[in-house]
Image (cartoon, rainbow, N blue to C red; front, side, top):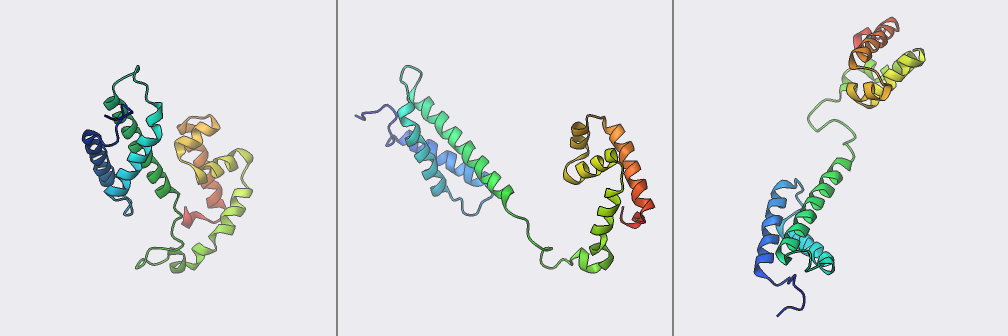
Length: 170
């Protein structure tokens, strides 16, 4: 007889952990994530939360199911976040030409664009800076204007770029 209601040697609990680990291994696009490692992580999470079980609040099986489900979701979120945080490759993928090497003028474009942005009025410079960092909807929210108003301002930025001789690069 186990001394704690959440018994780690319970075959039903082991089957639950194996099932969750298998599902997580299929969904996590990480080659290092295999079923056994994920099952071990889920089991460790259950053991860590085992002292928090209160028999007055519910069934041990329901507690174990909730803890394993939450731990699986946390693992999936952490692995997805780690994948997003990986740095981008320095150059183009192998077999693809570097667009900057194909057009030498494009490599020299950055100073011209920076000079054109500096010459913009403050409100249009804010539009250009926001669009370099976020989406149109995000820029409109940040500026507190509608997207239609933002598109009108973008047209003004384009006109300023054309006057600066950057029409070919718009």
